[in-house]
Every structure is written in C-alpha cells, then in structure tokens.
Amino acid sequence: MSTLDVMQRVKTSDTKIWTPEADAPPEVVAAKRAVETYNENLTLGKHLLTGDWCIWLKQGPDKPPYPVIGLGPQLPSPEVISDRLYRADTRIHGDKILTDMLKSNETYEREQRYASEQATSIAAEAYEWAHRDVKGYTGRVANVKGTKRDFKKREA
Image 1: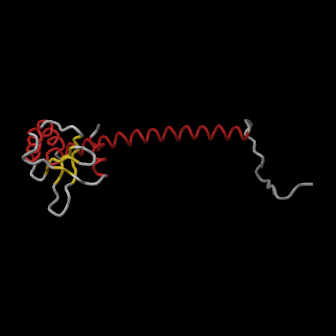
Image 2: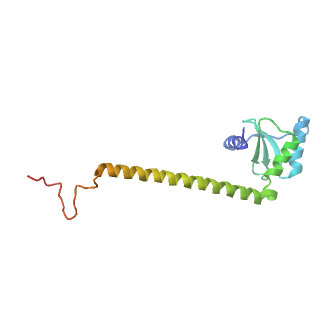
Image 3: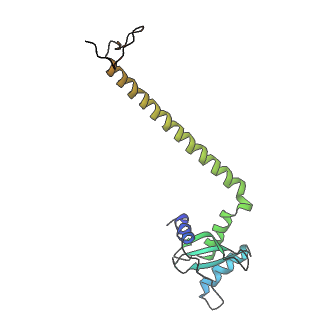
C-alpha cells in the first residue's frame, strides 16, 4: 500500500485520531518519541476510522492536526520512521525534491507531446486517405473553377 493511498483515505474521512500516551505499548511510545525528537511540531497518531498510522503536523490548540506522512496500518520501527522523516524533509532535501519533480514533469510532457504528434500524424493520414477516396483518384471535383451551381434549382 502506498503512502498516497493512506493519505487519501485519511484526508477524506473524519479526523478522529488516537495519540499514544505513556501507558501505550513500548514500541508505540518509541515510535512517537522518534517522531517528536525529529521535530517537535510533529506527532504520531492512529486514525481511528481507517486504522492507519500517520505522522501529523500540529496546527495549534484550535485546529486539528494535519496528516503529513501516511505509515499504513502496521506501525514501522522507529528507525524506519526516522528515515522516512529525513527523506521527506523539504528543508533538507527541498532542492533535490524540486529538481526530481521538474525532471519527472519534463519527461512526462515530452512523452505526451510525442504521443500528440503521433496522433496528429495518424489523423492527418486518415484525413488525406478519406479525401482522396471521396474525390476519386483522378483528383477531379464536381465544381470546376469558374462554374457556379445552384443546387436549390433543379435543372429541367
């Protein structure tokens, strides 16, 4: 299950989270400590409706926390959580993340442009084939230059 799937589930449903306290299992307390040691504005919590563990950004006393990294239904070890936090930290890796995103977008746009050119080429060939077929292979058309026909009048 990808982080994006977890984040979509968590964001679209009611925000009811359980945050571990001191009486929680030791592995959960260790994971929470790893998150809060990395950044005091972050906390670990489990979304009660979806069952997913997430790292949440504290937004102050009057706003609910906001999910920033989805961990899935199984809580990873504190080392894995610290590694994920480090890799996702835009203060440290922001330039590299932006460069990677721009490269990915350029590649995608180049592929889309190529596909568009191929589709245009195929459509042009089909149009040319149909036009030749309607005109006939001699290239003659019904209306010769200089003659006007009025199709509303019927010639007797």
